[in-house]
Amino acid sequence: MAKRVQLILNKDISKLGRAGDVVDVAPGYARNYLIPQGLAVHTNPGILRQVERRRELERQRLAELKQQAEVAKQAIEAVKTISIAKQVGEKDAIFGTVTTQEVADAILSVAKQEVDRRNITLPEVHRLGTYTAEIKLHPEVIAVIDIQVVSA
Image 1: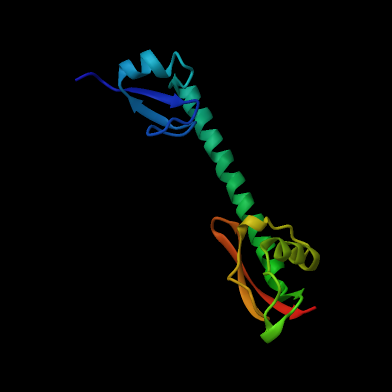
Image 2: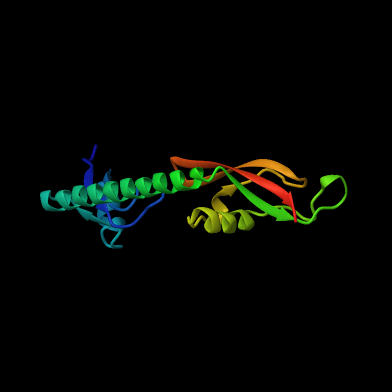
């Protein structure tokens, strides 16, 4: 059997790894495809140190993002309830529905935190009342807030 060659990927390659990963591949695959295409380079101690440094910087950046999400969560959850006024028809049924954009705008005006509307999960809102919305600020940080739909 031929020995494996250790390379560092310059770009993401499906079924092999992400950019910066150290991978072991067949020598022919490395020599004939990965290295000529500029997708990978041979490893040496200096490059391995650079890879470790990049990983550490990325880990610190992700930790900082999580910390910022925790601060935003506390600010959002400090406001217990957000009221949204809608026009009402018969039997407390509202015209239309409460959209995630309306919730994001209400959070911005009340809690002074900007939230992407695509990260807000709302139940179907077709009547007056109180509903619970989840706001995904980070993959590990989710804020929960009550939305009170009131008559305009």
